[in-house]
Length: 580
Figure 1 (cartoon, rainbow, N blue to C red):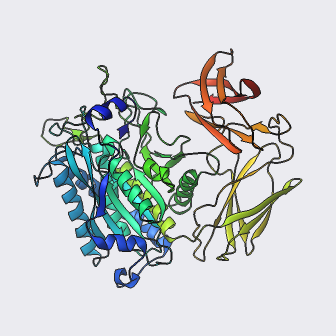
Figure 2: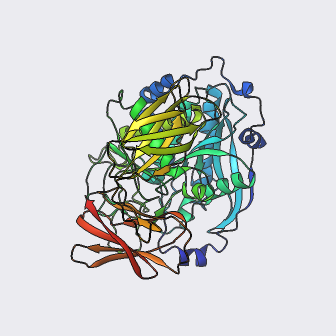
Figure 3: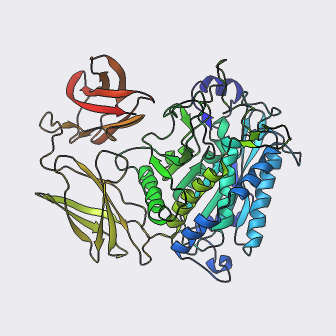
C-alpha cells in the first residue's frame, strides 16, 4: 500500500526519473490484439460454453477455496523480498522469481481450461531504485463480443516493501500488503476462466505500487495512448487482514486488536455523477442480489466517501486519472498506517513483520495467522461477482429527462439498444441507493416520492433478458419543489446538504452554481458547536456541481457546521452530524 505523505523529497533524491516511463509494450503481441478486439472469439470458447450468470455466481460462492488462497500465500512468502527493484536473476528470491511464478500459475490455469487465457507481461522502463526494467503480469480471458472490446480489469500489486523503500534484501514477504490481493487474483482466474463472458477480463498483478503506482500507471497510460477501452477496474490492496493495529490510516479501525471479519470497504473517487462511485454501487448491488441470500457468512459492503484512506493511495488511481471507472477493495481493519519513520510505530504494515503468521506453540508450524483465509475468500466472492456481472451485463442507458409533478417523479430513459427493462436508483443522504424502482416494458416511469423535503440523485441501469443489470448511467440531480436548501443570490449559488449525513469518517460537501460567476476564491469552513474553526477547505467554483471532501477521522461524535464563503462573503451555513 503506497503511502503518499513525505514522499516528494524522497522521490526527488532517490527516484529522479519517476515520471519517465518509456518503452511500454506487451511481451506477447496477441494481448494487444485481444484488447483491441482483433481476434476470433471462437478460438477462445470452451467445448461446452456456460454463460449463465446465476451458475457463475453460485460457483464463485461455492468454489473459491480458503485453502487455495493459503497455498498461494505460502508460495509468495518464499520469495523473501518482492521489492520493485529486487533480484530478477534468481529463480527463488526477488521480484523476478515472484513474477515468473505468477505467470506460470496463469499458464497452468490456461492449460486446464483449454488454453483460453492469453498470458504475458506488460513491460516498461523506468529508473526505480537503480532498476530500469519492470513487468506487470497479465492473463487475458477474451470476451465473445468483439463489437465492444472494453475489458474488466481485476488487479493487485505484487511488489512488497519493508521500512526502507529501496531495501532489496530485507525480509519483505508482504502478506497482507499485498500477497492477499495477489492470492485473490489467482483464485478468481482459477474459477472465472471456466466460463464465457461478453467482455474481456484482465487478471493482472502490477509492480511498482510502493514506489508510486508505477505498474498501474504504465497500463493505464498505454491503454489511453493505444485507445484500448476499459469498462471497469477492480483494484485489490490489503484484502485479507482482520486485525486492527495501534495505528491505521483514517478512516481508521476502532483500536488495537479489534477484529472485523465481515466487512470490506470500497473506495472510489467523487460524489455526484461519479462513474467510480457508480461502479462501487453496482458491485454492492450484485453481491446483495446474487450472493448475500446464499452466503454462509454475509458481508457488509461499505461504500466509502473518499478515494482512499487519508494520505494514502493505490492502483485504482492512475486509471481514474485517465478517465476509466475504477475502485479499490480494502479490508475494514488494517495493521498500521505505514508511518515507518515514527520511532513509536510498532505495526506490521510496511515492515518486515508483514508475515503470514507466527508459531505460538513452538512446533515450527504457523498456527496463528495474520491473514484470515475465510475472510479473503469472502472478499474474492464480492470481487468475482461484480466483475462477472459487469462482463456479462448489457450496455448502460442514459436518462433523457426527469420531471416532478407534486408527489410524483417522472423519468424518460434513452436506450438505443431497446432493452425496455430498467432499474432506477435514487439517492439522498448517503453513497448508497435509498430506493430502487423497476421500469418494465417501457422507457418511461412514474414513481411516488417518499419525501419532497430532500433533493434526489437519480441514475438508471438496463436489464437484459437474463435479468442482469448494466453499469448505472450518469446521475441527474432532481431539485424537488418543497426542499429547504439555501437559495442565495436568486439561486446563483446553492449550498446543499452534505452526503452522507450523518457520517462516520468523511463526507462530501456540495454546492451548486447555476450560472457562470466571476469569483476569485471560495472555501468551506467547518466549525464545531462552539464556533471554533475545525478546518478550512479551498473550493473551486465552476458552473454546475462543486464538491469538497471533509475527512474528520475516526472516534469522534457530535454536531458540526459548514459554511460556504465566496470572495470572503458568507453564502450559507448548514449543520452536519458526525456519528461514529
